[in-house]
Image 1 (tube, rainbow, N blue to C red):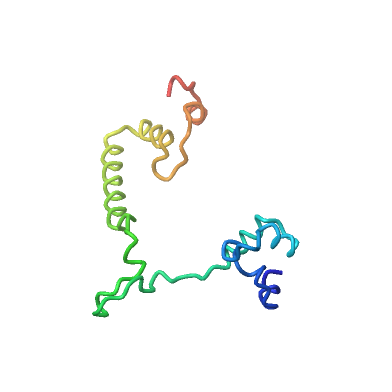
Image 2: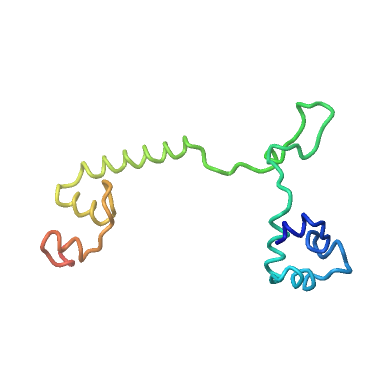
Length: 136
């Protein structure tokens, strides 16, 4: 309905109430037979989009132009840090598990979700080895 009103050139339905002080949001919403919250949503979603690559200000030299994207800090961790962390965890995991007896290794793997397993409670581990949780 907002598009239809806009196509008819109905200024009351297409412009925000703050622009035309004589038109109130309740009157515009009532003329379109929608709630005020839906009117606010429709008006806010119909705003013009701006590309992050669009220049936010232009300098004398084109190479010095700044885009909106240049102003947003990149705080995402680098892929290298994920790889380093994963390799370090794998080395620690392998060296610790190599020092344990097979039963101890199995219990720790089940308890802490190592080797791609789901984490389990002491009750669940006890059920696997047919022993009480205190014996785990």
